Amino acid sequence: MVELDDTPQEITSLVGREVYSNSGVFVGEVEDLQLNVDGEAVTGLALGSLNAELFQAEAETGQGVIVPYRWVRAVGDVILVNDVVERVRDPDEQESELVA
Image (cartoon, rainbow, N blue to C red; front, side, top):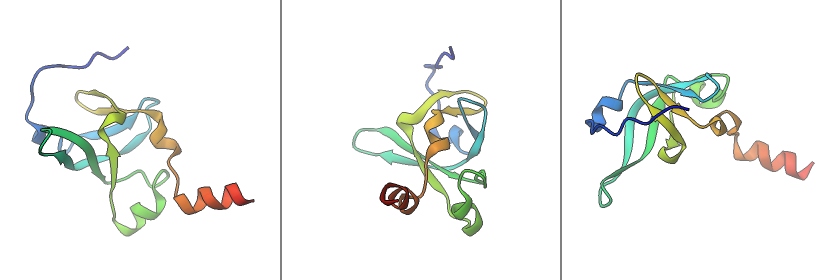
């Protein structure tokens, strides 16, 4: 089990870190943070330099994705997120699969 480091850090120190799933698949790199200013909390990680196999359309167009911070499992030299990120699909694809 990975232990979370409770030492306070500057949130800007997350920018530039690589993000991997629990199973070791590269997801992307943190470019920015989504914040809840009133609650003084990070709510999401805005990722760029995406894994083209996971996010083909976004990687091709240069768009990023936002990973909900609740998916973060551990923060260290890299950031680990739940494997659910590997199963994220385009909503249109999900609809067509449900209809078929």
